[in-house]
Image 1 (cartoon, rainbow, N blue to C red):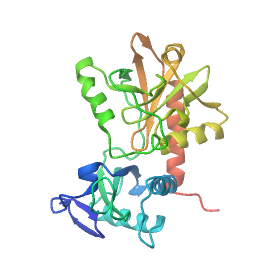
Image 2 (image 1 turned 60 degrees about the horizontal axis):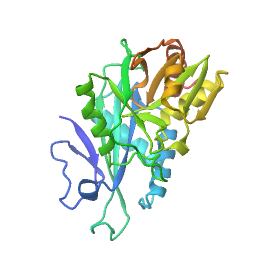
Image 3 (image 1 turned 30 degrees about the horizontal axis):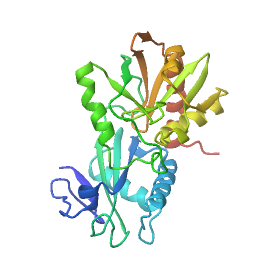
Image 4 (image 1 turned 90 degrees about the vertical axis):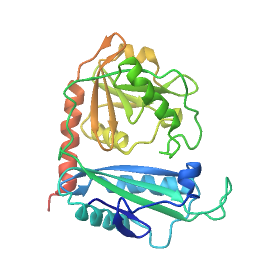
Length: 287
């Protein structure tokens, strides 16, 4: 039996339900946060909670009194214990506006559901076979104040994912409405040229990924230059490497964009740095 945390209690996942007027279901009025578990503990929780608070504010939702990082940490830990996850895993929290009404809600109270599942790996691992990617050209992502948040409205990414099988690809690159490359279906993107990292700027509309932020900070801490800038297809063709990042998978290297082929030396290096940071987070050194 697997449990979820919903409406203030742990319940069997098969008994958890949402009402027909749930705004997440009817209107996509909400957002989600995905997190990685190592040694039975969510890593980098402070970064995730900072983004949760930022998104709540941007979407004008109102959490209950006492909503804080320690509350979320305790609820997640309780769920992981109930589901027997003591090593690798993932956690997803789906947040939504708990209110009746149509487009205009009658109130802005925040509600959420926490889910968890075990993963075989207890650390970040690099994909053995590089991913093949191409640009998803059917739709572009609009750039606005909400572009950086992980909205429940994921239709653009779903349509991109549906196209992968048709083109025999592993992932698709998303462009904004100015044709800049900003992300993949579920990850941020980095390119490597002459030992320097480049990643799309938030102003271009990419998701403000927590792993993106961690990779930037870890690279700078290790004297690797990083630039946030606008990327176009020509930059991909000139790059030495491309890798993708997200909170659950960490780093995935790309072997091919169209006819271009890539190495993965920087991907391997950054993965080692990331795993060391995750290990130190889970088992901090006592001074």
